[in-house]
Image 1 (cartoon, rainbow, N blue to C red):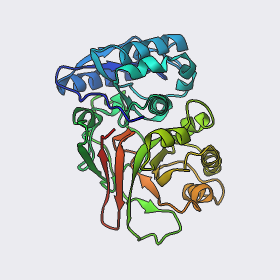
Image 2: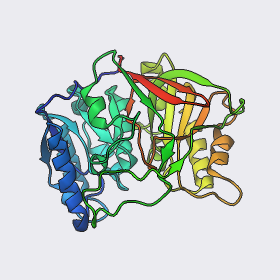
Image 3: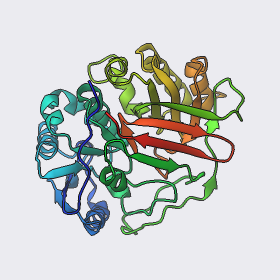
Image 4: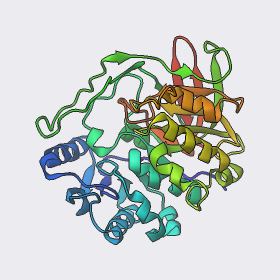
Length: 346
């Protein structure tokens, strides 16, 4: 089997907006409306479903969310589906989706956080590339130099083309913008500096240059897929990744002990058997006693004998790299620069 990529976005294509997990609370709908207008200003039509304005823990009953997501992903006029953001319970859609239908005519599915609960199985089960990147509510932000927006990646996705991104080595120290008071905010507050860090047993200053197929998601959601038909990374590696894997993981809020347990669960499920490197996001999540978040990664993965890179822009701390699940990636890291080059090859 080979990786299949949705065709590149073109001006006039329709972008679907649905909320397969949480909808947008009423006070924040101004941000949703503004984000939709920003996408239109980029040259795309936008179709907003009924679920994004849904209130509560989930935007609508599971069957309704599954039907709206399926309708958009299988409509040939819709070339990308970008939820407003994540949430908590996208997992309740997995058994309600027709995966063969979703993979028949590939359409870009974009997002992160709980959206990765859907991105990951779609790529693992069908071989269709998905895009782990900024969500719709993030789209109005100006991306910093060196980082691509999801719209850039999806529009440039030619077979064999290279997409280079570079860590800006700056990030947000904490907090979130107030979309209710400032729905049109467009500048990230990147008020802290810091490079990627090497956590494995090698010299921390030793350069990294490694390649493999990208696969990953949010630890707090995808770790529950390990050992199920929706999280069989070992099978994906055997069928799609003769080159090996680069596994990336986003840590949102779990304490360090919970993260260590989750990483051990992924390891026991074979997630790292074919890994050539593991990338772990920068996180503001707390330590557990004297166990730091970096210690948690070392505890579970430190003896794998592969590069472990932490504080990568693949999580909830802005900014976010746009990473294509299934793409062949080259990861290079050194004292002065950290880059990911993706090639969208079968």
